Length: 358
Image 1 (cartoon, helix red, strand yellow):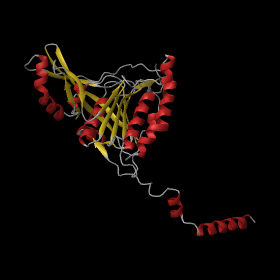
Image 2 (cartoon, rainbow, N blue to C red):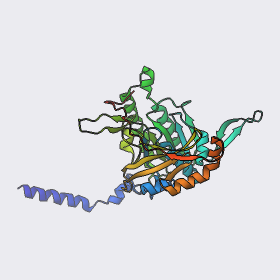
Image 3 (cartoon, rainbow, N blue to C red):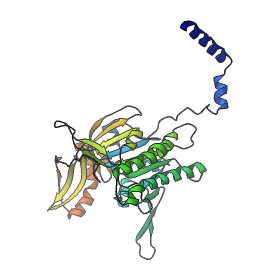
Image 4 (cartoon, one colour):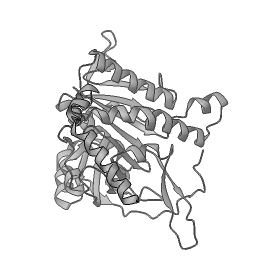
């Protein structure tokens, strides 16, 4: 009997399908011609970045996370992304909440910036150019960051901002949520909740939907993310790298690059020295792809970060870089010959925590 019932159900289903046209249904419901994604494009970074990680650069139309301890190369990667975006008529939109920003460094990296000079004093009073810049003067909370991004996307949709947008946030974990501000207490659980609500459920979806063929623009969000080291959960275990601000952005990111070591920066300094004076002109750091949902490549290696961008960790590249900048270092050091020294990476008994430090 059960078999007969099944056969009857199959017969009814077949009869219903015989007079049904799926394409007509899709057209009626507005579900046709909106499934195709654009071909994947990349923003090329320095040759060293490509050589070490075996990828073309930063993927467009995605959430990208650059995470690591301080001074490991995250901002260098962010600025290389901005410079390459400008060259391709993609508008860099800087959201600077950590407030370590330097226009001199940005210009040194190749960002096209116009100086606004006071006619009376000759002093530089502002900077303009093909970019948008906001910082803690107007951005005070996680909600402010998301609100600003959504406002820019809305203006783009209205036709008031006719550019592909490259949002560059430096950095997650440097700004609290509104509830933390109002309570005068930087509560990490509240901050993580705000990141999940504001970005995981809202901003990030708007960004990735721009990859659809139906979208006239392609938008990207590249964020640097502070990290902290969690205590090992067993006597023989190892510390674990954790993202400040929670893992909402990690889960939504399709591409994550980690700089430095788990518990500390793990960098080694390269310096020019003369008569007790020194110029630190480069750092050697570990770099690896921790997450790649685009082409699956996951690699790791060492790279050298300089004030002008990344270079390969090779004697040839270091020598070429030294020769290109000998004059400016000599001026700082008082002229004449100087010595180049390379410090070994120092293993630090870095502090670890049971929960995210306030």
